[in-house]
Amino acid sequence: MKTQIRLISVSIAIALSTTLGNAQINPEAFGLYNEAFKFSQTRFNGSARMQGMGGIQTALGGDLSSALSNPAGLGFYNRSEFSFTPSLNFHRSDANFEGRSALNKSENFNFNQLGAVFNRPNLDEESDFRGASFAMSLTRTNDFRQEFNYDSQNFASESSIIDFFLEQADGIPANNIGGSGLTTQAYNTFLINPVASPAPIGEYDSFVTGFPRQIETVKTVGSQYQWSFAAGANYKDQLYFGGNIGFSTINYKVKNSFVENDFLLDESTPDVIDNIFIDEDIVLNGKGVNATFGLIYRPISQITLGLSYTTPSWYEINEESFSDLEVNYRDYFYAEEDTLLSNLVSQGELLVSNYNLRTPSKLNLGMSYFFGKSGFLAADIEMVDYSKANLKSEDFSPTADNQTIRDLYDRAINFRLGTEWRYDNFRFRGGYAYWADPIKGALADNDIQNITFGLGYRSKKFFADFAVITSLTNEAYSPYFLANGTQPNIKVENKSTNAVITLGFGF
Image (tube, rainbow, N blue to C red; front, side):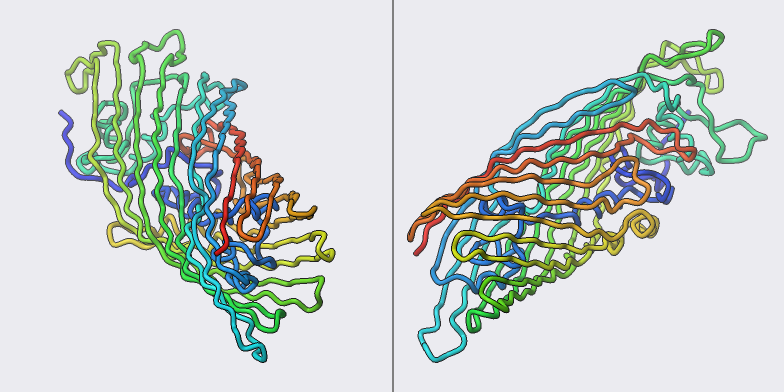
C-alpha cells in the first residue's frame, strides 16, 4: 500500500491562486512571485482630501498623508493637527468561465489613516528657516479583500487538476513522493499512480479520465499598513524637505475551495469517480521597514514641483498553509493495489515557511499649478520596476521564483491627476489615478483605474473631508497551470467603491 515518506518540493504555497499568464513562469517556482508582486504594488491611500483628488501627494503639503508619501509636505504646516480617517468599502467581483458569469459582493469597514502632526515654528523672524513639523501616522496601503467563484464544464481546455498533479510528479520516484503537499495527497488518494515497469522510474498515469465540471470559490482578506515617523522643514517658503522611517505590516489570508465532478467520458470508458474536493488555506504575516526622502520646490508662487524617493521595503514573512483533499470513487476496484476505492481523504500537514522579501524602490515626481487662492491642478508620476523584487530564505531555495519575477514583471509608469477648488470654507475635488500593467504576456489587462471625487469643509480649528473612490481592474485567474497552456482561464472583473471621511482638529 502507499505510505507517506518524505515531503517533496512541489509547492510550499501551491499556486492555486494567481492572476498571471504562464509563459514566463518557471515550473519549479513555489508561487511566491505572486506575493512578491502583490505586496510591492502599494498605494498612497491616506486622507479623504488626498484620495478625493486621485491620490496626488508629491507636490502638495499641509496634509497628514505627506508623512507617508512625501515628508517634505510637512514643511507646509503652521499649526499642529490630529486627524483620523475611517472608510466603508464595497467590493464586487464578476467571474466569467466558459460563458457563465458569477457575481459576488462584499463590504468591510476599516481605518484608512490615523495620526498627528506637531508643528514647531521658528520664532526668529530673521532666520531663513521658517519652522519644522514632526508627524506620526498609521496608513492603510493595501486592501486584499476579494471573493469570486465560477462553475462550468471545462469544454475549452478539456483538462483536470489531475493533469497538473501528473506534471508535478513527473520524474520523481514513487518512494520519494511521500510527505505533504497536494501532489503527494493526490498520490495517496490514487488520483495519480506510478506506471509499472518497464516504464521509466518516475512516470505516472491516472485511471480517472475525461474532463470535469469545475467549481471554485476563492476568498482573500487582509491588508498592508505602515507606521510612518516623519519630519519636514520649510526654507524661505520656497524649499521644503523631509524624510520618514516606515514600519510596515502584512496580514494576508486566502481560502480556496475547489471541486471537480461530472466527468465527461467516452461511451466505452467506465465512470469511476463522483468528485474531487480540495480545500486550501494560506495565512501569511509579515513586517518590514523602509524610508522615504522628499523635496518640494516653489520656483514661482503659482507652481510647486515635488520629488520623493522610497527605498525598497525589507520584509520578514511567515507563511502557513494547509490543504485537504477528498476523493469519492464509485466503489472502484483497483487491481494493481488489490483494493476497493470509495471515499478517501488525505489531510495535509501544516506547512510553515519563513522568507525575506525585498520590494522595489519607487520614484515619484509631481507638479501643482495654483490659480491664486481659488484652486489648483496637480499631477504625479510614479516609476517602479517590479522585476527588482527579490526573495531569500534559509528554509528553501527561491531561485525559481526570483527567476520568474525577473521574467514575468516589468517596470511601470503610473500617474495621478487631481484638482481642488474653493468656495468660502468649502472645497470641491476630483481626480483620476492609473496603475499600469507590469505583467508580461498576461492573460488579461491588469491595469488599475481609480475615479474619485470629494468634498471638504475647513475652519480654523476643525476640518471634515469626504471622498468616494471607484476602482476598476480586470484579471485572469487559473486554478493550476499546464505545460501546454490548456489550463482553465477565468476572467474576473473587479470593482470597489470606497466611501472615506476624514475628521481633523487643529491645536
